[in-house]
Length: 119
Image 1 (cartoon, rainbow, N blue to C red):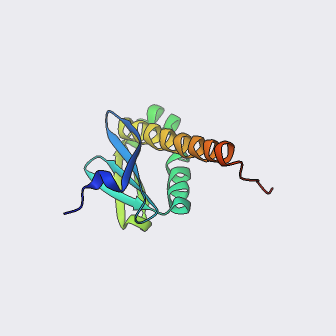
Image 2 (image 1 turned 30 degrees about the vertical axis):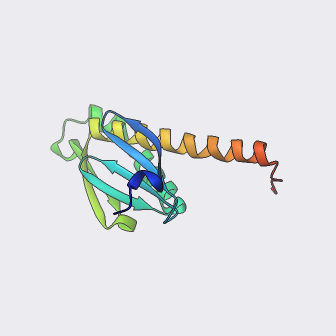
Image 3 (image 1 turned 90 degrees about the vertical axis):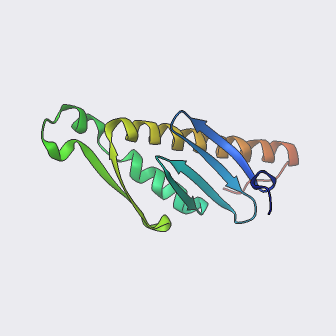
């Protein structure tokens, strides 16, 4: 059995989840709320935009039962998540921290290896 630590690097974690970068599959692994989702980087960014697009203000101030939760589809991971307001906030935090770490890693790689960037 191969040790998971040999090919997965933790990117970010909070009290509700953790994300890894898998070197073997070139995917971002998101563990949140009992679910494990694996995304290619473009799918991860699409999923993050989808989560960020949820109107939290409407969920807070609308008293209708329809606003007690939000259903987020993750077709790349073949999942449909039914999330409460608190879960959405925690998932946003996890995804934002992961995105920041990916950006930071890219910037450091460019600085260290002096990779030219083409706009």
